[in-house]
Image (tube, rainbow, N blue to C red; front, side):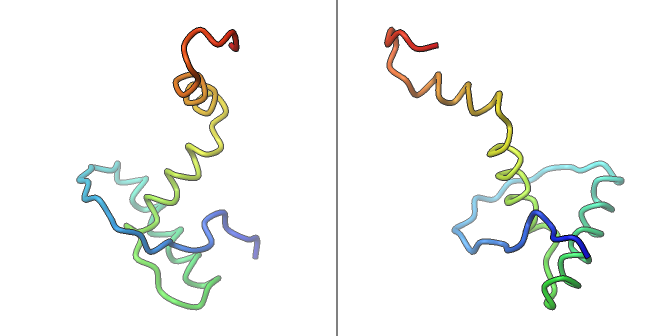
Length: 80
């Protein structure tokens, strides 16, 4: 079985967010949680996968990284 990208769910102080997911995405989330449970040997709450999935997505989005760096650099530093 190929290794899943989300290997562990970090235990961090949460901020409550309410969102609506399309039914197909919810089914995929449930399937991912089942696959992860088979791989890790213990059950996984599908809702707890959303945060690490979003974090991984944003961490690997190059355009987003460039925008964040641009916002964090001092104005007029000559970099671009």
